[in-house]
Length: 445
Image (cartoon, rainbow, N blue to C red):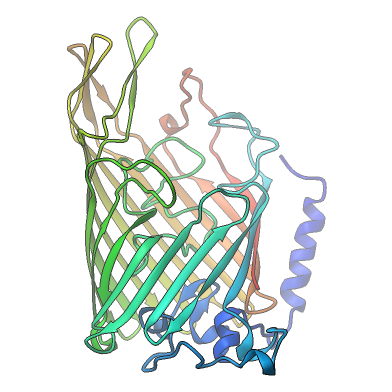
């Protein structure tokens, strides 16, 4: 649909783009604490540069330094209001949202004339807090308002045995946070197709319980002497638990290596996860369905994932590449007199994106992503059927303005390049390609 104010909205965006001065600045939490510009750590909004990577690995302490306790803070007696300079506590509120300006009238779930874009209902806010409580001891908390569980919350112990040698995180965290091109810092509106597929179609979706989510665990990582090589090992619940909930009888393990040379970074991650959490519901020849429940004591679901990613950071442009190869194997199951087995499923996803940093307040970029799984066989009650491969694809173009360093407003065009059978509903009907025009915004305070 097209909103009645669409033309006016585009005019307003154009006016902002060509009228916004380039000298405006703003300083959220860490910038206030250390009295440095946001651009010291970020190439673009949320995208870390080399200095930002080192700041993060160093436990949210300035590289080659330690703080915590009274360092970089003023006594309460000198500043009771805690509202300026170094006295401001490291708290930030992130406002994020988006709206679909143009889209087909029907999608995979039926009528979507009143749907918001992608992953959010209009707008949402997140409270982020992080910093140091003593030299080399830090914390991070991310709490989406209106949700029961936190998104992330963990303790960090940094610089064991020397600068960058061994760091330890304990708690709920983003698993692929240190990869060259990880998940969660996407510049474009759609989640990376390498990990998640096109959100407008059902094809190419992730299989198993993969690494591209938050989970609770223990992570040991380092970048010795802040040099070129980084490493990481971790153990997690594998159930994507970030709050209260029941785990299964096994765990997930991950290993990652990364190299940084000038502005180029490449990384390779392995993720192995045995779980007993995914029920399987299949259709029977008579039109009914049967569910084969998971058993948390019998972890017969085996997810294996290999993630290659690369990024290049230049003062004028950014390039990201991610390739995700995942396999999922199920054990044989039975329920209500029925039996189920399935061959290993192989999924491949890839994404590439480039962003042009035109000046301090204007950016534009293009991206393309592809995701599919190979044909595989499924056997129910001795009858074998083949599940055919379906391809999902999405091309994106986005233009974004930053009137201040901690705010962005952008417009994005989606071109759905998925195969026709990716737009097939369960009842056998199809729907049009999901080409869309989106408006999004974000602000960090």
